[in-house]
Every structure is written in C-alpha cells, then in structure tokens.
Amino acid sequence: MDRRSRRKKKINHRGKMVVSVLIILLLIVAGVFAYWLLGNAKHKQESTPSSTLHQLTRSSSPRQSKTPSDTSKWLQSTADNQLPILMFHYASSQAADLAGGSNWMPDATLEADLALLQKQGYTTLTARQAVQVMTTHTKPSSKMVWLTFDDGSLTLYRDVFPLLKKYHMHATGAIITGFVDKGQSGILTWDQIKEMKASGLVDFVSHTVSHLDLGTLDQAQATEQLEQSKKELDQQLNQKTDIIVYPAGGYNAATLDIAKSLGYKYGLLDPGRNGAVAKEATLSDGLLTLPRFRMASTTGPDALFPYLEDATRYNEAHTK
Image 1 (spheres, rainbow, N blue to C red):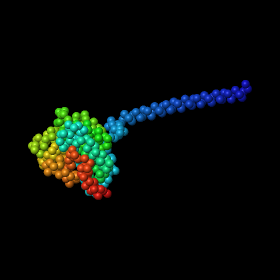
Image 2 (image 1 turned 180 degrees about the vertical axis):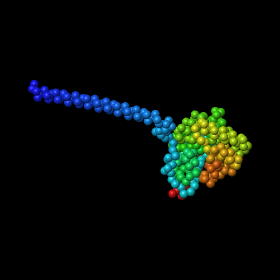
Image 3 (image 1 turned 45 degrees about the horizontal axis):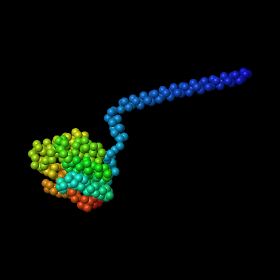
Image 4 (image 1 turned 90 degrees about the horizontal axis):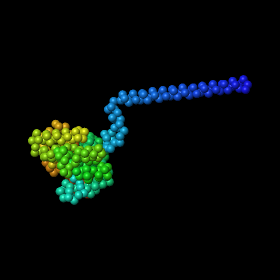
C-alpha cells in the first residue's frame, strides 16, 4: 500500500474516532440536562402548598353538579324573579305506602310530572341556585322550578332518586336530623343522604330535630330544634346550612328572630298552614317566609302546570 493510501486510511480512522467522541459527549450532556430538568420539576412540586395541590386535583375531577361559574351565562331580569317552589313529601310504587294519605304520591305520577317538566324545558334548581334566583336579577331560564321533599323519607332514596337520575333533575331534601340519628323506620340513613349529595342531584336543608311546630315552642325549645339540626347537617355534610323548612309551616315572629341569629337566611312555608298562601315565591315575600305549592297524591301533569304558568309568563316578560 502506497503512502497516500495509508494517510487517507489514517485520516478516516481519526474522523470516526472524533465522531464517536462527539456522540458520547452529546449523550452525556443530554443526560445531565434531563437530570437537571427532573430535579427542578421535583423541587417545584415539593414547594407547592398542599392546598394548591388539592385545588389542582379537585379541579381536574369531573363536575357532577352546576357550579357558580355556570351562572355567568344566566339571563338578566328587569325585576325580581318569580320562582315556583313545589312541596312534595313521599313518592312510592308500593300499595301499602299509598294508603298513607294525600302526601303519598304514586311514583308513576311523579315521573309523569318530571317528564312534563323536561318536555316543556324547565330547569330544576339546586338550593344554591334557587337562592341566587331569589336574591339577584339573574336566572338560568324563565322556565324554572325548585323541587323540595319534606321529612327525609326513605322514598327519596328508593323511589325519587332514580327518577332524578333518569331525567337529570335536581331536588332538595328537608331532613329531620333526630329521626335519622335514631335510625327511625322509613327514614333515610346518613350514608344514603351523603350518597345523594355526592351525586350532585340532591342537596339537603334543615327540617329541625324532631319535626315539632316551632310556633308553639318556647324560645329555648325552638332554639334547640333549629340549632342542633343545623349543627349536625353542617358536620355530617360539610356544609353551611342556612335554609329551614318549618315543620307543618309553624313559626312566629320569635321563630324568625331565632333562626336569623343562628345563621339561617331562608325559610320555606307550608301552604295552607299558619296563614301561608300557595303562590310563586318572590323577594317581597321575605327570604325567611317563602311560599310553596303543596303537591298531593293526585297532582299529576294537568294539575302541576297551572302552578308554573304565571311565574313563567312573568319571568319571560321581565327578561332583558
């Protein structure tokens, strides 16, 4: 082999060595850079407050119910809104239950009512949304209704809850906390209440401890009924209970003062009791004395719709 060939071969060999060295250096640099990025990211994660991490985790989970941000797209009203609040008690498919009186609605009748609301485009409000409707000139729709179920009956879980799921509707349950604590027959358990609340389809308010007529109690007794029920609902459901549904619609001026002092801001009446008139609720009724429409066992779609028409027409006429 001549001298020129040997020199060319030597140069090629050196070139390959240089390329190999460069590749190794690049791999080392890349490894160091990757290690630095990993360490920096870990440092940032460790320095993030736990509350912030909780918020990030919570915000990434699916939302099961409407949030305050949804209300940014609500309609604007030119006057106080009118809201039909429907007062239910029990819905059941069992014949033995339905013999219990006018408060026992066949589940088929309730389903027909919900089907009508869905067909007509009505929005069923959560308690928080109902409060906003009552206290601001905003609303999700001119067609809106608040479904309330008194007494915390087992039927709310067994018969009503499946229908709320089926029709994607909301309801509010008024809980007699002492009945739940005693494990009274036919009454919801705390586990069932918590399951329904977690679904986002049912929220819960106070119906006192023992379902006594507050208007007939002395100050100490009324205070105990209101205070203890609120305290337990707050603890059990991690909420700030500020809505009272008066048992049998019973209250007096002292009742309202006590309720207000304990942190209640809103109260629901029983139409036909204590002078309460069945009508759509509006701000002028007083937030602690909001009227409702009583739903009887025979209140099917034909009887239900008249309760909604006047408020709907009014809300449509007072929309910007």
